[in-house]
Length: 112
Length: 113
Image (cartoon, rainbow over all chains, first blue to last red; front, side, top):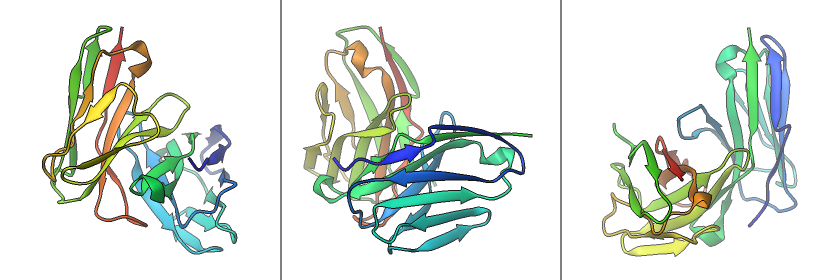
């Protein structure tokens, strides 16, 4: 199993602050996905990054895939209470029907 | 659109009991997965299926069984429940391998006491 390490595990910030979440591995991934999960629900896809060095923006969220395709980051600008949730990075495992290997997640709390 | 549905939403089992967690999708996806999520541990793969009649073990298959008789349904069977199986179980499906979004059900919260 290809391990994905996420940091930080917990993050509590005030509305308007910026933050970055990191996802690192010693393995090369063909792609990485970021999911967001709210309490009592399943994860929902935010973005898929495929090309090394790729940067994708989704409103206030910026996702980056490392040049060597071993790491990724999620940056949120001017966080809002609606950004509160669990952020999970995941890489596909071609040996298991392209099931996802997940990091342990970053739990984000944004307070007004 | 229903997407991926799971039943039940919650369940409490006694040690040694058995149950089946139901999962169905209406998107005609060939690939389906069962994950479990424990606090602070992310999601771990239990079993997966690449099409009707084809299933295989994931990272944590012990104590579970699956079947895939149709494209739509992918039930997970727990035999002789143990406290270690207390977890939240998610079923997911995807259209095709590589780069495609996995769609997750709302989960089943299982407690074994």
